[in-house]
Image 1 (cartoon, rainbow, N blue to C red):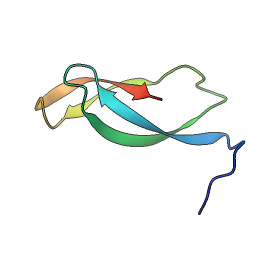
Image 2 (image 1 turned 90 degrees about the vertical axis):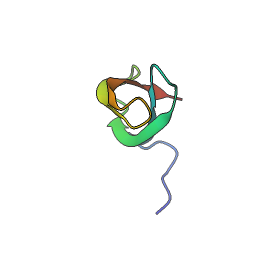
Image 3 (image 1 turned 135 degrees about the vertical axis):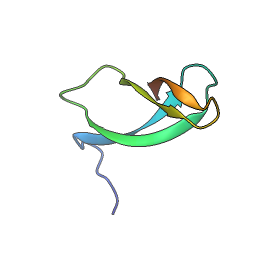
Length: 56
């Protein structure tokens, strides 16, 4: 199903802060979280939990 242009929930890609690998795709509410998301997630390349940031 195609997304409309003014949707509130958007898909964002999460990138590892250390190795720069793009590991995760998640959705976020644009109105509640206008800044970039940052979460600690497992990186398969580093084999550790690392900070992952939203990539535009």
